[in-house]
Image (cartoon, rainbow, N blue to C red; front, side, top):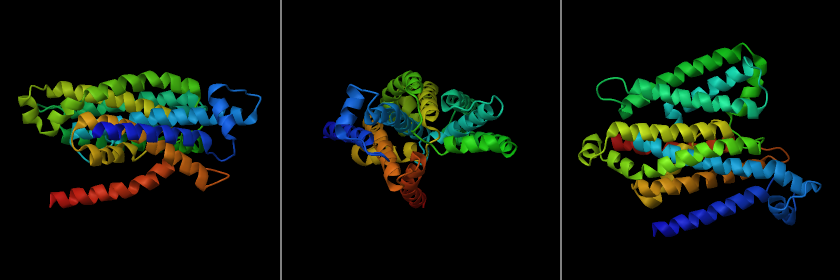
Length: 329
């Protein structure tokens, strides 16, 4: 049954990918879409649009979606916190402060230049949070990781604000990156991010049995033969690779890593061996459909995908908070 659902979800992802290539703010004939993907002739305007705009945008959505879906699932399993998302480890805040530094201090103006500073910042912030959360005899407990993430995010966000307040030109560039977007990404950038997503994705999917054990509590997981420190280090490593790559490709997209694992659990139940592959298919589907909505609702302009995912994700977030509050009573 779950295997059939996974196959149907894969078909839905294929349909969303096709829709992302076909639908846009301007009209492109269907035959130009097909030719633009497989046998492009850049002298034809429609095929040039597919090659230069829609195909990189679609690939960015696939790459960032897979990364965010898996990272959100792993971080919720590691922290046993249903409201956790990749930003809990300071990923977005770390990426933001390094992007602002690259724009303001190093005068980098192209996304292909400064997004790798975002990747570096995301990685270093996550390592910092995990290092702080690991202090003490108990190691990196879920509560300590959450507190360390909140404190680190606050410090890094204040540093970002301080730099932006003194440089209005940097603010103008940064605000377009901060909202989260799939457009304007070069194929070379996606090619460089792909190995991080592949390695992080393989590591995350291998975490399924470990996360199942961790969900039963630390004592039970130890009784099953798990080394909790190894589990948390491997999980944090996968989150660093996946979130760093996703942030580098699309900026700090919100709610995708939070909402998608919960949607997957509605079908799979609590088994992380199924939640992970379901999330890896569901997240890019959601991201591509949100991007298509953003292109259609504001024609001839468009809404960035980060705005659409935030609008769509606020409802399940409120429902999750209400459910958690009722469970705590």
